[in-house]
Image (cartoon, rainbow, N blue to C red; front, side):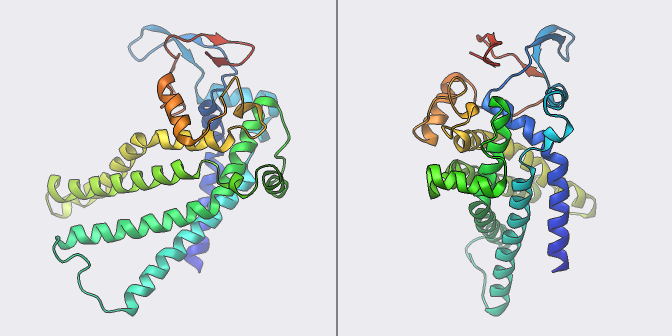
Length: 300
């Protein structure tokens, strides 16, 4: 119980610290660009037009809404973090209890023990993460919509409880799960890519020995980074679907058409070359072949 409380506390702290970063990232993902490009220099010293990075974007938000403005949507995000941590831990705990209660042999006798164990652990982690995501997704939707309100200066989702009532009244139960499918798919693909790549590196690329212990721990972080990069389009599509056509300016034209499904959203982003929009908040290049529209605060 104490360990679970500690995990919730640490998760909440990280959530608070990362809130400004996520806030800026979501607004960039939607396509909102309140500041025009400026002439700067890239890492090679060449003059290029660049979009404002994280700090310039955050400074603009502070100028408009004050420092507290950087923490819009924090309450539902904290709820999501705390509930998700508890659900994730409970699911893994049930697996451990079931494992102790039954006498079992090797789950996959035809495979190497280490590979079989990796498959089993990854499968359990997948179920735990999916359960946490499914239960906390309504809070995630509210968080995103609270943030996107910055674009149109709306106050439609001003509180967590009132936001639940608003979504249920206007969209029904399905409104709480907008963007869930691509989010789940992205999480599952990222998990399997990360763990399988880490297993291959630790088993075949690194030699066994005490000196390699730290290298094997680092391999998990490195493969996790590459897996998150590869599955980022799922994150982008999920977030866009969560705010699409919800009555907020950021989810309507000119920022986004009304998508018929997440596959339609994916297709449109792919055609426009925007599959990585918001992936980087530093050294942001001006989109090729597009011009900045000051009145709309976006590129087209």
